[in-house]
Every structure is written in C-alpha cells, then in structure tokens.
Length: 212
Image (cartoon, rainbow, N blue to C red; front, side, top):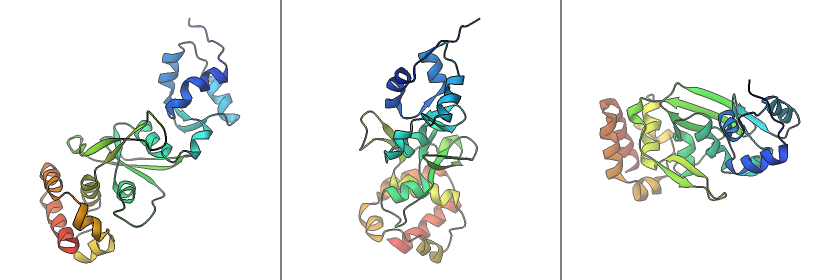
C-alpha cells in the first residue's frame, strides 16, 4: 500500500507556480505519495483555485492577463482559442469579450471559475486546424493555441449558421480595414475548402460582398 507523504505548500508552490494550470495527474507524477486532502485544505485556505475537476491554479495568476487563455487550452484539451475571443483579440470585432471561447473536438462544454467563464464549441476532429502557438506577451514559457484570423471567422460562421444575409453580416460589425487590408484571402480559401461545406461557402461569399 502506497504511503501518503507530507508536502509543504511552499515546495508545492515553487514547483507548480510557473505552470499556471496544473492537474492532479501532474501532481502525482511529481510526488507519487501526494495526499489529495492537501488540495482540499489549500483550496479552503484560498492558497489554490480549482478551475475544474482535477485542475488548479494559484490566486496570483488572476492578475496575469494571459492566464485565462493559457488555462483554456489546458483544462479541456484538445482545444484552441477561437470564435468571439479570437475575433476580439485580432481586433476584427469591436466588443470586448467576457467569455473565453474555444473550439474543441470533444463535446460542447462550459466551465466557470475565478479566472473567468469558459465556453467550448464542438467541431469534427478533421476541423481542428488553422491555429498557431503564440508565445505569451507576459510570461516566459507559456504558449497559447489560438486560431488564425481566417480560421476564427470560419469557425464562427460554421458554428453560427443563422448568419446568412447581408444584413446579418453587417450586424457582425467586422472591422472594415482589417477585412480589406489584413485578411489573407488565399488562406481563407484554403481553409474553406477543408470544411467541404457548400452552405458555409455561400455565407463566406456574402461576408465578402459586405466587407470586400
């Protein structure tokens, strides 16, 4: 029978703090005899924060603006930041987005914790492409998986098929300068071909009519 080992919070924090988001699986690799009751106690003492079942962070990371994006990738993988969050990140839509929105090959899911509200929209595994690994601008060693602008647009239209007409596209209030000067139309077309959706192609054509 495995013996539970006493672990000081300081040694625990020193090891896991740079990771931002860590799992019970990682803890057990670090210390096979780790007593899980420590997590319950430290959570009650507000020394750690539960992000979802089996995933944790430290309260100090709430001040790190990249932490919600980084944690979003970790607590429900495989996934990448896309949809409204990515569109706002690239300045394509004017609104600041409260939710952290991601795309995943797993089932649709929502989590709420002290870092924010996390929403994951489900797509087929073959549509999990078109994202890059961007280094954090705040913390060394963190890389955030986020859709390219072109993929964020396609993901949004694919998962929100009620946007069909020119009026619908105008309601999105996409940034005209971005759409005319920065959008990579060749990449958009390449990605669109991979979706293999005639209805999505029609909606993209309407989008181009409005903004191009």
